[in-house]
Every structure is written in C-alpha cells, then in structure tokens.
Length: 119
Image (cartoon, rainbow, N blue to C red; front, side, top):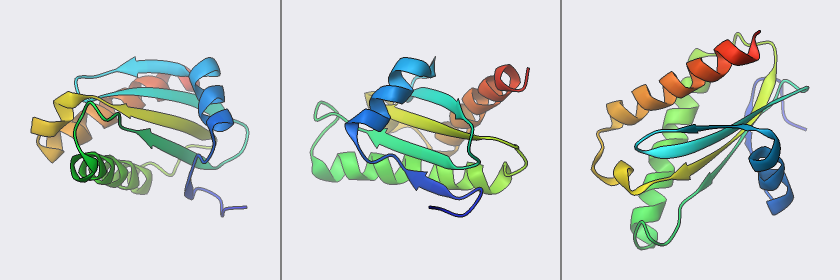
C-alpha cells in the first residue's frame, strides 16, 4: 500500500478498463484523459502510447514527458481530500508540442475535472 497522496501506477488491464468505463473523458490535442474519482487518497495513473505514434524510442519519450507533467502537477495539487485514477492515451500531436504546452493542457483538464468532482 502506498503512502497517502503518493502517485502509483495502474498495473493491469482490469484497472485500466474500470477507469475507461466509469471515469470521465477529456480530449486535448496532445492526449485523451480518462479520470475517475476514488474513495482512497491515492493518485494512480497509467499511460498508453500506440505504435502509430512511432518506434520504442519515440513512445518512451512521450511517456517520460507525460510522467513529468503528472509528477509536477501532483507536487502542486496535494490539497485535494480525495484520490483519483487517471489514464492518459497519448496522441500524435504531442510529438511537436513544447513541454509547457503539454503542462498547460494537463492543468486545464485537471481543473475542469476538479470543478465537477468537488460539487
């Protein structure tokens, strides 16, 4: 079991499926984000990149960039009193994007989700 407010990864297909089926979907130019509020105070995430995006080197770079965005966001936003699971499906638009654009896009989506979750 992870410490409170610590990010851990989604590991198996069943966990990903639950987020796809029960979570909310948000679309950006760079990724699709599926997010689901949970009862625990853990933040869990999973990242998927299809082979259409590119070879292994390109796919791994995309995942590293998203992981860093998520890490930075978690450092800033630890005041939420609930946890959530999120799945990020990378789109090809991320290849030419600046890191700051990806960060802004992720923050916008998370703020939209938090506004609806806190109601």
